Length: 223
Image (cartoon, rainbow, N blue to C red; front, top):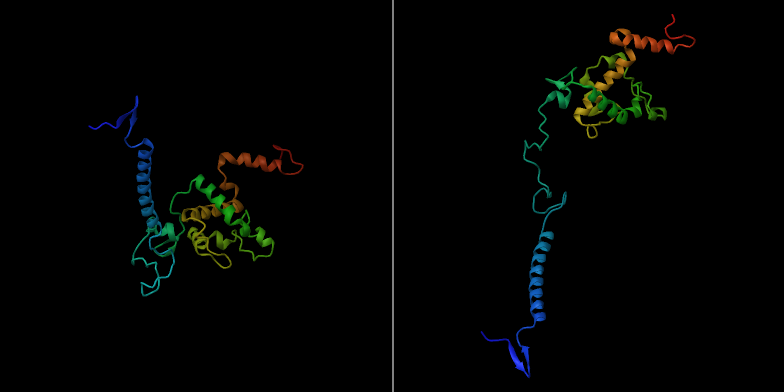
């Protein structure tokens, strides 16, 4: 192998490629590869494509968005439970709930009711919410006998489709929460029309003592 050194006087001198030049060549090669890769990525970014709702001259209808194939159902939107999603059974408004209502469900219904319903219906369901007090037409009281006798599916249907001056809340309230609101409305109706017989026997004495303590001039435990 030929040596890269030669004698210059009493010293040996290196005659091969300098380290600086070798490093520069490597950097140039790496830079070229990086440019090639960057060019590919840029091309991916500016590729021809249609943006949502952009018109097209390719299709006869002038639309770039193609209509879905008939019968297509989006993931998670196969609503086969008629009661859960329509409030009906065999096309008739049902007076039942599609799932058992627990205390947690009622609490969730109370929360949703307070958010979406109280502006018109107020916290008790009497129909004197804040916007009604400011001039908006009042809704009927939820404690009217006709509404107390209305099936549970009626409330689900009204929340879903709207009624009179009330618009639809379908886009704001999920189906399960509409049922929870309906259950809470039932609780409100019961709270305003309950009798002592509706109170569990082991709780009646506490309620009697509480009521006695609220009567002016009457001491608890005294007739």
